[in-house]
Image (tube, rainbow, N blue to C red; front, side):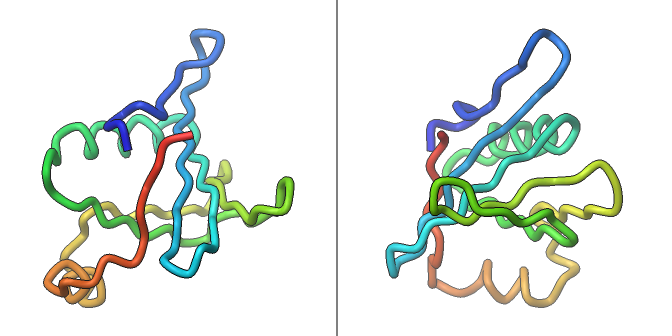
Length: 106
């Protein structure tokens, strides 16, 4: 991913970050983050040069567009954990040598 390359400010008001997660088996998952979530994610990506960014999204909205499944944040109830090593699964994933997803900006 071109770090921060997927971040855009629309109409001077809205901020959006669009990503495409590519699994090793060829499946794709679009991820669109809006507003503060986009700003926060881009900030973390820009600061983590040469390091993996692990993020967990809870309560995302799921939908299919042009045959590709996607998730995005909603206005309410979504939680995004970025590099939160207090979550045991995140810490275990970081310490493993298994990269499951690749990231590309859209």
